[in-house]
Image (cartoon, rainbow, N blue to C red):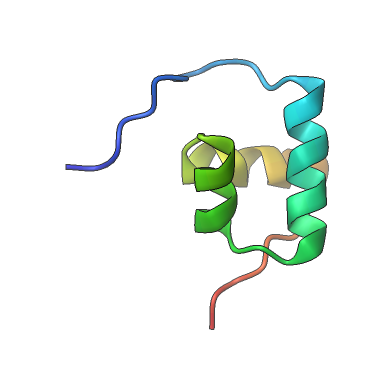
Length: 59
């Protein structure tokens, strides 16, 4: 069963948005950012797309 997140459908705070921008600029992969922020990968991916951020892909 997939991991469950207690923060289901919670709005993004300004601090979280800044942290997302910082981690994305450092080149962290999606899975690592999601775990660091305790949000689902889908949530992080959607927010990054809305903000025009590029998330690094694992190779």
